[in-house]
Length: 46
Image 1: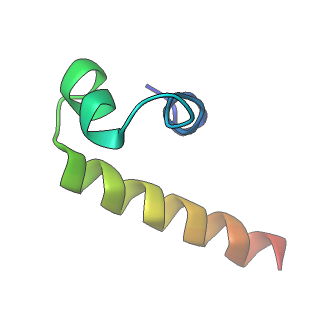
Image 2: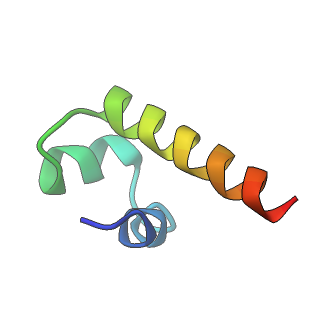
C-alpha cells in the first residue's frame, strides 16, 4: 500500500483499523513510517 493511499484512508478510518486490515505491521510501525515520510517531504519542500 502506498503512503498516499494510507493518508487518504485516514480521512475515514483510524490508523489502527487501516494497519489491521491492509498492512503487514501494526499501528505503531505505521505511525512511525508516516511521521518519517512526512518529515522527509517537508524537508525537501522547505
